[in-house]
Length: 286
Image: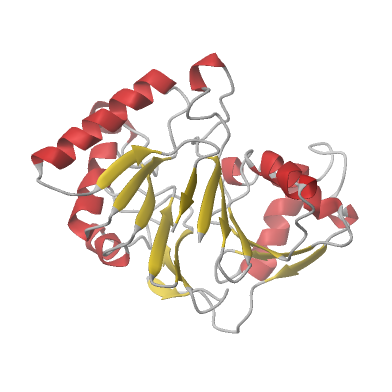
């Protein structure tokens, strides 16, 4: 797998001089598999630049879009995704047990007047729902219906959602962008469930939005402190941890300090986890 980050900011896009190195676009991650599949995780504002890139290289292979949940910072790039307007393109949308009904509703509503000038029904691409098999995504941990190499777990997040585990040729990438480890939401898994889901992963992108002090007043909002994210990755024995869903108030220098704090926590725990801050245009080969 080749993984490229097009957006890793949380809650709100934050362009500007103080977010140049880590980027200000909201969640969007591209995965290209060894067998030629194009998978897009979430449709935040970073999807705009990804679409431009795919058009520039004439990359019109079928696209599978996996949505973790329907909060607006994970959907807002879809109306600006160039491939959705091209009749030669095929896009499959997936994101949970009711995706065939819910995704069109979520995506369509943000394109209704007066919010957007082009309605969803005017898109030219061939858009399908669900994926390649009939097995639904349900329960705490279940096979996602997008092929044999993908599994999912419910996120511990307000209004729910799903995180994903992609596996190819013995390598594992886990994506948990909006996930709260220190508070239990309805139908959300527990800390131990996430440890098991991430066990021995080669790469984990995990929500690390808050400092411990910030988390004292944001508990229950659906996001983790970076100390909790590090603790979970350490217990799961992941090889690399990418801190994700950066708070919109966080500058590049703030994030440098956050990464160093996490590395110190890992050193004190005697852990070999390689920790880094996710940044736009970062490419990781697994």
